[in-house]
Length: 404
Ligand SMILES: C[S@@+](CC[C@H](N)C(=O)[O-])C[C@H]1O[C@@H](n2cnc3c(N)ncnc32)[C@H](O)[C@@H]1O
Image 1: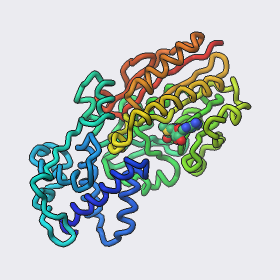
Image 2: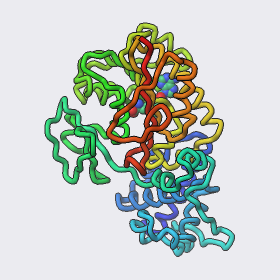
Image 3: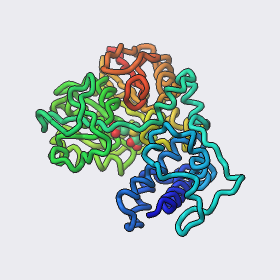
């Protein structure tokens, strides 16, 4: 592909990503994969360059741009301002000159197309800025590239050496790998010895203090990232119930557990609004219940920067309502003296510290336990992890004790 045709491909992809953000469609990664699946002529270098350009445009636009062309024209017409940005160094071929009207390239720019993106604009970013006391450094750290972290499954792997892998403080079972490492191509991954999992996600799971032989519920297990970390801490002994309301996500858990040699997990699909019925046999039974609640994902913008185009006041309000409901359902499953661990990958207090404060206000016989984890700063009744301070995704976690 010529540089101009790469720019045109980025424009087309951004049109799809913008429409998906407006209409609740597929994630950017999925749209990019589909786009290139239908264009086999694009080589791996072209695919990487277009992807890089698309993500640069997403990261630099806090507000949803009007079109893919506006997004790429915005970057191009303002390119000198990005001289220090990582993406700029990797895309030296990109400039406004590519809008030259050549075959398969974008049409020339007109004077009224000069659109200046602002990374910290938009409603979602304004919410995050308020949550971090308007510290721009916290906000911009959320838009940097995420590192590639793995968790080593000690049930399968002893000592592990992976080229370029670095230790992560406080996580003896984790490594940070060079970006682009093909983890799924490693023999150790195929043997179940490795899982890709952000260091922050591994750290907040430790708040469950899972022990061999316990009975634990992972209420919002998804595809099981935290379930498998809990099973490892339990040394595959005890009972681990993994539930979720999303059939597709939950169906990915069983094969992952099998690959990891985990046999203590029972998966159970929940019907939203009828969860308690399906969990009647676990009422007041669990030593710990982990709620990795559905949330705005503001803490994971490093991985999904377009998520900030999708967050609206109405969507946030709905998430807050669901989280409060899940907290009540989870509390009912905890045995007397057991623990409820509440996690969101969000920096917004409505979803994190505020949610837990409301729960404790409604349940004065429950109490927040102090947490000592390898990362995080005390925040409300729990801890907050941020990319700036902790070099992890952003999380809020709290551990609440049930009355005896
Ligand atoms: C943050 S994700 C969980 C990620 C997962 N724990 C992991 O570590 O990979 C939140 C999950 O909550 C699930 N969820 C949403 N509403 C739910 C409900 N009413 N009951 C159970 N799970 C629900 C979503 O389907 C989603 O998989």
